[in-house]
Image 1 (cartoon, rainbow, N blue to C red):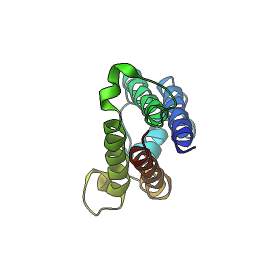
Image 2 (image 1 turned 135 degrees about the horizontal axis):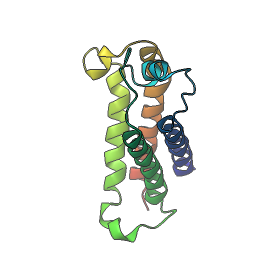
Image 3 (image 1 turned 180 degrees about the vertical axis):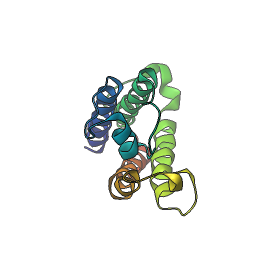
Image 4 (image 1 turned 120 degrees about the vertical axis):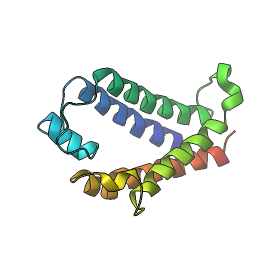
Length: 142
């Protein structure tokens, strides 16, 4: 159940990034507004390149697949030596990302509004939940 929840959330995040990569600004009305909402960048000259946004979407998708793999729901024999280690790495990444939001120092302190509010209320708590989910998978690996 934990793996499926992580997989579903990360696939949804990946899908949203694909939409953004190809010019859909939801939930914003423009690229500048979207950058302020989801990246904390005020008045950017341009949106991130399409290729970079697609790569980010691919990373989110791969992390979701990793959750299923760590739970033993799919088999990836060519990287079996990494099983367990990936869950620990993703635990550190997601929990670290979530904690950074609430520290008085660090890269996220320079972010603009409305990102800071969304980050404190949604992005960071989601990151912490994903990190705890990956921790659970790491501790309960089959």
